[in-house]
Image (cartoon, rainbow, N blue to C red; front, side):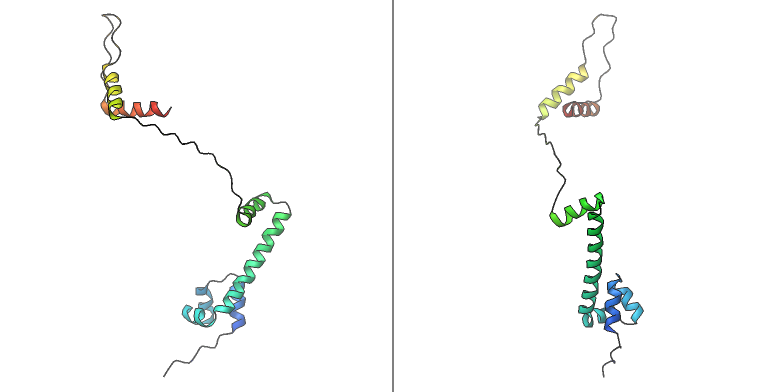
Length: 139
């Protein structure tokens, strides 16, 4: 024998959906399962959701037409497909390993001393030199 159906008022389901209640919230208030609501009251919930969506859209349009710049921009993007134009510059440069190795060797050797009194510069660590080469390339 099947369980008796819970008496649920369709207008109450629609009213709760029209104020933005979730299926979980409606089920808790009415004392039924979410599955029951989704199977037996799908249409009233859709009508309630449509009502709140229509009210929100009307308010957004009123704000935009009243001069709210933020709402004008947002609605333009949402309803008219407008987008902000962004320019991206992509730079491709191929550097061979040999070129990087040559630059590292040159950095390690450093400039020759100008006089006998000038000491030669300290050798440069290979990892630091590689990073310096890559940084100079980006500039």
